[in-house]
Length: 208
Image (cartoon, rainbow, N blue to C red):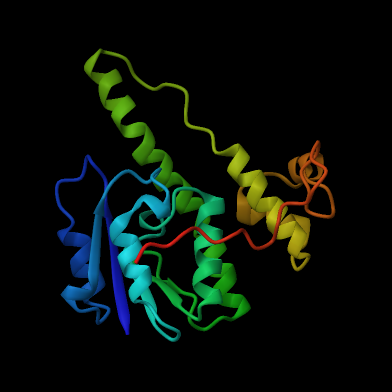
């Protein structure tokens, strides 16, 4: 069974484009759940996402339009994908043209390769109101939103798993290898922290 999830940002006029793309994947309209909120809202605080997750069983697929519709940060995305995998549920992202159903290393690499676009989409949504206000006041540009901490957390998790070289982790996360060596220990802990970043984050509470 396929269950669809749509998140509509407060500045978006309609969700028709997302719904249409998800329905083309064979998802019935009554199984598509829609939240209207910013991407920064945690999964546990999205009622329609929780409804969608509650409907999923082992062997099912959660269909989304784009990765930034599901998670609020890089680390949150990794956590959400991990929770779905633990339940035997696949994730299909239509615009990113990827699925975790195959469970192969190639699919995993494709997923992480999409993180750069995912981050840019989140940054664009978060900074759009500020840019609009600045332009209205005759100003341009401004300091970009930094997600450096999220990148380090993700790099720490990947290094903790021990399956990828630092150079590959750097490419996936979008920072230089020297930056990872400078901030992340070999055991997956961040410099200045005594405990390694856990490989599997605790699940978020679900509401039926």
